[in-house]
Length: 162
Image (cartoon, rainbow, N blue to C red; front, side, top):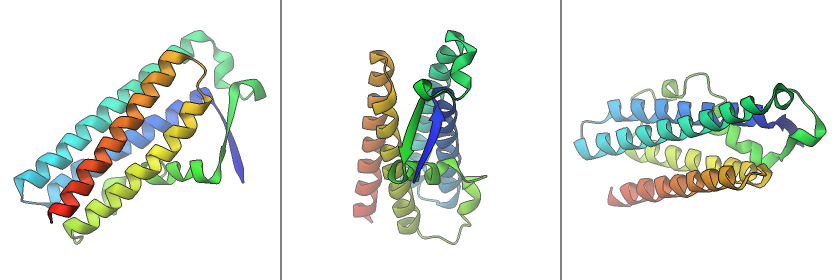
């Protein structure tokens, strides 16, 4: 199975993934009294908000290049396979990811869920990185991928600490 998007749509999806990730982490921070855990989730939320702005800036730059990039044209599109599309299931497709967290989850459950979401984001952004022709934009996406990997390390360390 494959799905085709234009560049403008890809950046909109990436923004939504990051926006929803920030909501998820802010909600997770509300669930736990431990200041170390709460601060970790709030820091992750702040980083996701920064990533959202990077993608918003990239979309605006793309938009300034011309309206043709907002419409589907084979030469201005990217095909994502099923594995890459898993990234959309991460934070991207949920209406409000903070509603996923009811308050009944253990810290271990929340950490495992967050790790899975971060790993799926990495898969999606790796597919995006392969599509981007501009070196500077590719570098920015590469930076975000490395930062998402750092998020996974932080979450794994917190999980091991439990």
